[in-house]
Length: 603
Image 1: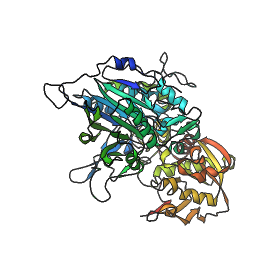
Image 2 (image 1 turned 45 degrees about the horizontal axis):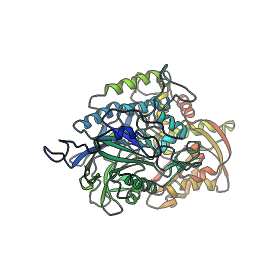
Image 3 (image 1 turned 180 degrees about the vertical axis):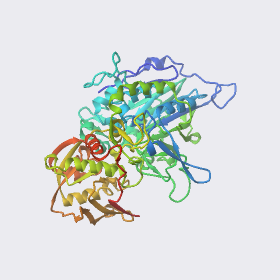
Image 4 (image 1 turned 135 degrees about the vertical axis):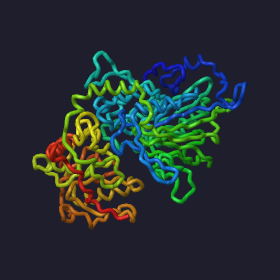
């Protein structure tokens, strides 16, 4: 798969692709290589040696064009007195305004993203295979993004379509007389290669240039992408080590005379505080950041001047030492367009490198008390008109918010509801005979919110809202697993690849156990407390277990779940969810949030 030429952009920037792929070399050659700017450097009346380049960045938008609903649409802000305030944030109408306001007075401004711009998207974008989001990102003047794992949800061919344009191969063009143009910014996938050819499936890097200032961007996704994407999505692809890949291309850029380099890495960490304005470099015990990005940052060559990261949906601005021991900025901007990062890169024209000691960075809330960008409002309205006949259909009724994505607890009310819906739909003998159901927490993408999102009325769950909760439309599987495999699967929530960052499965009613967080590894799941309908799990007995196809393939580190036999493929997770809402709620008897009493937590 090769990239097609980038479309011409506004004169404020020119992007040059990697050698051996498509370039805009002729445009670059026509620019004055040694042009100097006045008034934007650190001198007066003379061409300045340094110039400040503004790097605006965000990550994990996931097609959230409209403000995310409920607790998923807020960020935590620590106040001067130490209290924490919840601030409503996000929505591309506000993100566009924030970015455009930030760019004012900054003639050297570049906007980059850390992956997962699309995938697991609400209905407004997901229904149209994320064409609306790509269109919005074009309008936001995004310059470049790394791929994330969710960019591969529909496979490399569909990702290439999002980059290059063209109408959907099955559903065609969504608007009469309009052909989808594709992204006018490059998707970078340096560490994703075609298994057969060994070549990157998209460009590994790009170079941003303006008046002689050159900054290279290398984009990678996490090496573990195949573990968190369905097998079909990554078929024929190979994912390589993040550090080795970035270092390889940083060397290549350096050889080409590009000394200023930013890595866009779709992998992240967990800061000690969830507040977007937390001082990550606080010296206190337990402060700072943990997670995969720390070791990655420590291994990436000092040739790279800053790291824009993502994946963990956290907000942080941290310094992590590079291999030479010098501090280097590592940033992430929460998710869903709720936060953006503003980083100042001081570029030295003589060395053509970034003055690392001068790098400054801060996260900012995309608040909803600013003006909406009119072009984004029009874009949302246009696509909403197309989606309305499907999106607005009522599916059921709830009496209060049922938290899923917005819940930080291991057991989530919405997780219980989804697992119960799956068990009920697949328990009949002719549907699979399931006795228990498991739901992966990462598959719950939103909350169910009581307040009306449109004209449907409070408490009404629409198809669009249900889709936003479960946008993957995974087919359900029912398989045979032994009791021993069931116990192992529960232990894999907190061990192996999930030891550092546990993934607690949401379980259907009837399954109970104790999770002892004072212990470590697999021992955190107290095996002799596991009960199904009051009875201890028999290691030798066979159980019929319902789960989505992602988990049934061993996804998210649950190898034991991938060992199932005698598979029956059922309805989609979304169909079962909607059927459950319809069967268990009416306007006069809405569904209440389920109790969270299946997993006993010891801390």
